[in-house]
Length: 94
Image (cartoon, rainbow, N blue to C red; front, side):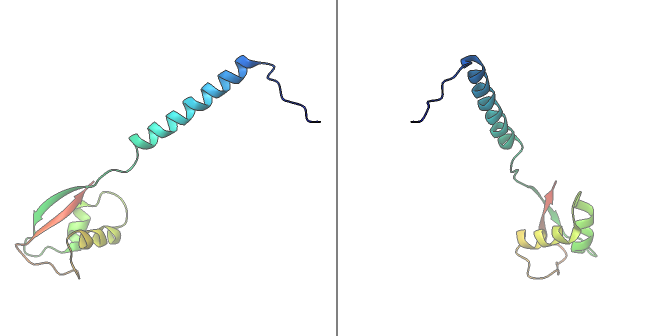
């Protein structure tokens, strides 16, 4: 025959459950507040002598420059690293 569990200290149980719910709400609100952030873009006009590497050095504030160049190529639908003078390029502003 199994024994049933009886709560001996109901106040402590309710405090535990309340604390658990509060901590879960805190975690969910923190992930919503500090979660995914849409990148901001700026449109620049390519000048004579500009390269993707120089543009990436100017606008990349953190991370790997090669990854930033890959993202620039992806955003602007570029097949290679050649850019034309006078054309417009979207850059990621962090």
